[in-house]
Length: 580
Image 1 (cartoon, one colour):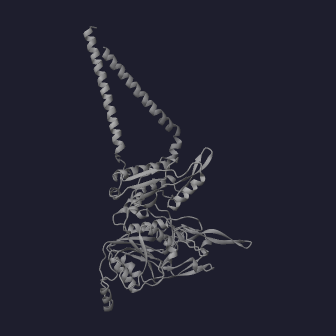
Image 2 (tube, rainbow, N blue to C red):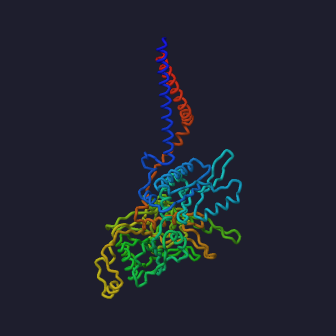
Image 3 (tube, one colour):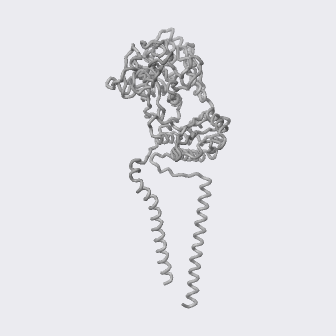
């Protein structure tokens, strides 16, 4: 080979090396630039079918319109089972998106409330979190040495302009339900949980809510937990309809909590006038007078109809509350004396068919992913054909019996084994949402001249049709009542059953009802979001366990070997061609 050819070959080799070095430098520069941009800007393409990584317009609007910094402290940090790690990852993704959309005004951190080696300090920290409104979950984790008890705090605290808002984002699963389903339900409601917390933290003028008094409604002590929870985010006041004035114009919602006396014509007109102005109403009405207090040490009592004078009004709005009681095989128990041991009576929890346990169907956002709800002496609701839109929120189970009033309520039914063939009035309506333009009770009615003068002087004219509004009718007034210990006066949380120790979903459902009735921005629609749970077939995984392990371990190694062989073969061939 001549020196000229050798020099040309060296120059060519040097050129190739220089080109490779330039490519390497360019690739390094691109990677550094991409990493720098990625560290400053959060970007994600949501290719999932249900858009699980995308935020709703309502949430985006709230995040972009924050006036001050919002700090979120999440207490979901530590060593968790796979399901909670998945939930933790979903929370991080959501908060990253909120931080991006807020222009950096949202910041967050994940902390572990457990203090290693200091049980006393840990318990104090736990107590403080519970006082602030966070709810822990007690998890039993299987390990080689047995079961390990682990307390997890799936919640966060939001700090905004001096406010501190607690956010719990774990849905309690019903007995017998797959825990992964509860995790999936929690992921569905993550955006709602945080968006609701942000809405409450940033609200300035709280809507005004009235709790009616004057018709022997539930005493204040019996609704104190509901009112207390409502007062955190709304201005709640008691109000009597007998006042010679219209319901104040700044009132957004009226709650009618189990009245027990007849409504006067004036009270009915004030309520109708309020609805015609676009006011919202939450009705909790018992058409039949039935209570365990009526037993008075006996074994039975008669349940008679109540005369509330509301039938024609509710009928006009689109529902009829029937004078009856339901029995439901799916119910909660009460203690019954079954014997004596010495001087002490022996009690046993027995199913009480007059206390139905209702599972929300989840077809509407406000009843989605809510624990079962306990009702007491509920009646049925018929839907009336009129232009108002109707949505059934709660129904009894398929094994239901309807008893017309007057009805004899006896403890004797407990001793009888229920015959499903007799419980044939399946799926009775117990709670209904009404939306639209409501016809007035006084539509096409002629009233007296004196009454006309009164309503004219008070500027309460008769209106034929309401502004667009909505109301919820529930056929059980006790749904809103918390238990009160008669001897000590201690108040139990709304939905807590002192006989079973269970906390039912009464409070969550009722608070959702209020939120929905007062929501004009479509905020509650976030609760309608669904994420498909794509679980593995456990039986198939168990059968093909060895094959799956071989594929997962062997396939990557095989692909790496093939890639190495092809790379070496191409390099050898290229080098041979260069030499030739």
